[in-house]
Image (cartoon, rainbow, N blue to C red; front, side, top):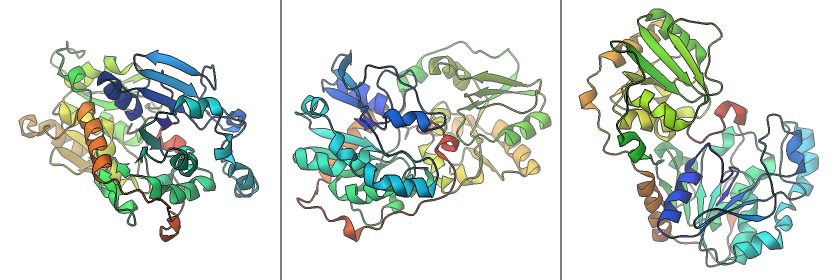
Length: 393
């Protein structure tokens, strides 16, 4: 695993769930955290990790982690002139791969690589490990993220080496028109967690809707709903999921362990996905974890039109109060028995599907020629902070 996430983090994303599945079936997983260096301190709101760095640590049966922290890594401070000056230095990033790291993965069979700095390493790793399978997990549209320009070029250079380009939403397949090995494979779900019975956290006789996560959080949409429906309680989960004003029927829970959120989803009357409009955000209806969680629990979903694609999703026009309130009313009146949750994958199913596709489409060239593939243009918004730190939040 080559990812910006850390193996022992309590905040789990797809890489953690894939790791759990692979380890449970007897595979050995090396969880390598990249995108770190002493330069990290110059990035606002940078992630902080506990060492030790550059060492292999056993974290679970069959699972090791490695926090790779070389002298520098590709980092953008959002200034074009600085990005231009640092490009020659950052082009040397693959040369920093340490002997300890490389020897630790000497028996690697499969690489799963995330958007970001890991793309810079792919050509070097593919040449060093020519028999390994390479999977590119596109977590978000790369053009919407504030990466250093060298990352965009790195994706262009790395694509021919991948046996599979996995995207979490069907509309994202079109983002890679020159690659033949792109497959839509949705996120999975910890179904056992949601299948467990629980006691409702809501007072008897009340109506409650829940909003999980703070990705592109639209506080105005929640405020509009809450003010129009004082008889309905709104429960907000997420570090930045909060309103500018205090309302009696809005409960701000903040960031809490996910297990404690599950009963709120199971026993809610509806779920909200209050996304703000943003460029290239149409993939959210399929890649959003909360959408999958709501659907599996058969909750009607209130969402903006650009993120609503199923019959049980009540769509509204962002900024249109009448439309927002009407969507809330439709969701609360929707027959939950009509919601089909049979297509929601477990994490085991999603992992197996990804590996199966990778084996089926293996066509990595011995001498990759990326020149036939266009370098993606960079968008200007939203920032990575806008998009949130958790995949599919």
